[in-house]
Length: 87
Image 1 (tube, rainbow, N blue to C red):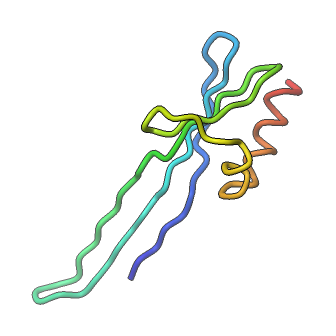
Image 2 (image 1 turned 135 degrees about the horizontal axis):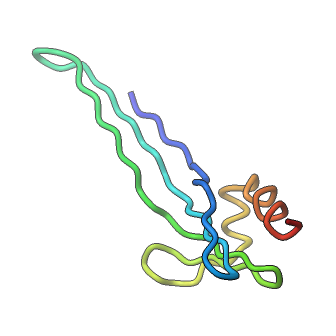
């Protein structure tokens, strides 16, 4: 059995920027000879950088990612971004 989900990690503020990690969490389980086996993995996908005047996303490979793409895969991140900008 396989289960995957995207997790928005707790934001961290450094100077005037807030960093929001996006992580894919995967878990697998299967029954084999001799028992039941489980595997759990966390794979960083990108970070979203937010300041009072700017928002941008960077992949784990260091490339810019359009915010539109981030919003497609994690639309709930806008709530986190709005709370950072208004605080």
